[in-house]
Length: 278
Image (cartoon, rainbow, N blue to C red; front, top):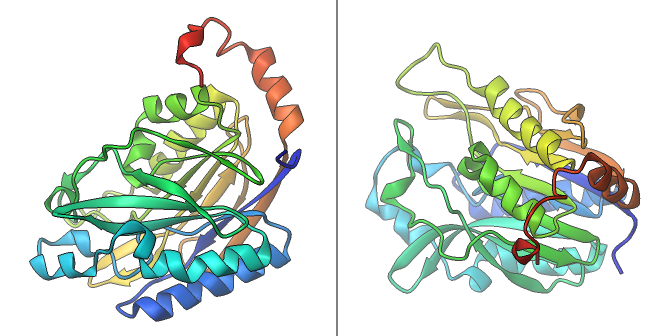
């Protein structure tokens, strides 16, 4: 049975060209977050390297790996087992001739529970992901981990309320979004940090469940990632956050029994057709 108390963490850091150094950065933050009591720890999207999707360059395809052979996955599996924590790991996945922006859920015993492939793929200045990634074919997933039922979308998924509702209908206790988002190269005046947060805070309100968002920071060849990683409670209120530049982690603890009771009391799921529940 999962614990009735769910303690979560979001990590935030800059990432460079050295995949091993990036893994060490994440591993170090995972250790710190676990020492602070977190048992589900979320790193940012595609922390294996720089956010390469701002341009279309074919050499980046060589940095994709089969999901269960990806260096980020194989490096963090023994760490998850050692610390007894759950780690959703965002990767660039190669599956035969197909490429995906994917996530492998590592349970607290180090086992890989499976793969989610990002459903919504952006395509615009600075975020040209459709050159690299096929739309996901896995459907949304909720992972029954040792520490709770975790729903995870990947970055662009977070703009779509139906993604959050689908995971809530599947029984998620909490929603998590690893992201890589920052400045808009075509418009220096556009800052999406506040609306990025508001979208996910709305998911928390409408589904009566906490939301965790993890972003990167740093200037990558003129594209500045704005961090502002946060954890919101079931009311959408931000309970803890990081700023636009800091490397670190944040944690929050939630009472699953209280959340289940409160979610039932609000009635947002009461009139849903039962065949859509899993």
